[in-house]
Amino acid sequence: MEQKENTCGWFVFCNNQLLIEKKSDGYHIPSGEEPPVEVPEGNTIHTIGNINGMTAKTYAVSEPVEGTEEDLHMMKDLRASFSVLPLEEYKMAGKASQILTWDKNSRYCPACGVPTVQTGPIVKKCPQCHQEIYPRISPAIIVLIKKGDSVLLVHARNFRGTFKGLVAGFLEPGETLEQCVHREVMEETRLRIKNLKYFDSQPWPYPSGIMVGYTAEYESGTIKLQDEELNTGAFYDRDHLPELPQKLSIARRMIDAWLEGKI
Image (cartoon, rainbow, N blue to C red; front, side, top):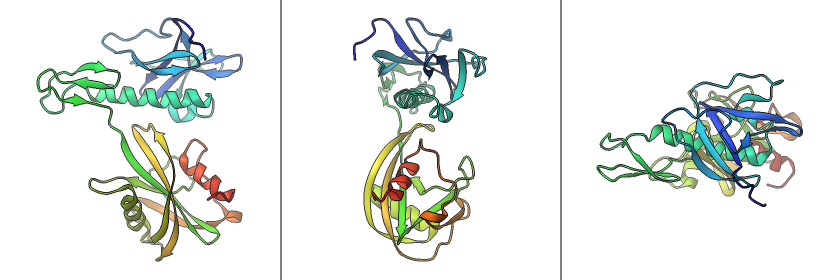
C-alpha cells in the first residue's frame, strides 16, 4: 500500500482507553499530519509501525477526551474497541498499549534507579550502569481439553463476565510451555492430559502478554477445582454449551475450531 506522505495514524491512550473517531464507514483511529490531541509535556510520541498506508504513532494523555457515541471522537476501552475497529487497527492498538505500558514502567533503571534514555523504538538504556530495558512480554498457555465429544470449560474468578472459557496460566521459570500446560491443568482441575498439540498464539495486551494455545485429550482424574482460581468447571457437549468467550480471544477461536471439527 502506498505510504500517505506526512499523514499518521494516531493511537492515543488515557490509561486503557483508546481515542477513536467516527467516519463515514464506521469507527477508526484518528489520522492526520498532527496529533489529534495535545501531547502532554514530557510524554514521548512512539513510532510503532505502519497502518493503512500511514506511519502508526502512539502517545499517552493525562485526561480522557470527552465525547459520546454521537460525537466525532470518543474514548473506548481497548477490549471493547475490538467490536468497532477494523481488525488491523485493533491489533495495532494492542501493540501501542504494550509500548506505552513499557514506556511508563521503564522510566528508571531497575538496577540503580537512574533515569533511562530511549535509544531505539523498543529499547531504553541506563546511562550509568548501561543496562538495556526492552518491553517485557509475559507468556501464558491456554489449553482446550477434549473428552470424547465434550470439552472442558471453566469460569475463572478473574474473568470479566459470566462466560466459561479454557484453562490458562502463566509460564514459570525453568519450565517449558508443555510442562506449563500439564502443571496448570493439574493445579487447577486435578486432571491428567495426553496428546498435547500446539494450536496457535495471540498477543494479549492486557497489559503485556502472549497466549500460547494447545489442544489436549483427557487422560484420567476427577475434576477438583483450585478454589482460588476457578469457581466452576465441567465437560460440555456441543448441544449444551454455556456462554462462550468473545471472539477477540484465542480461547473462542479454539472452541470454534473444535465445534467445526477442525481440532
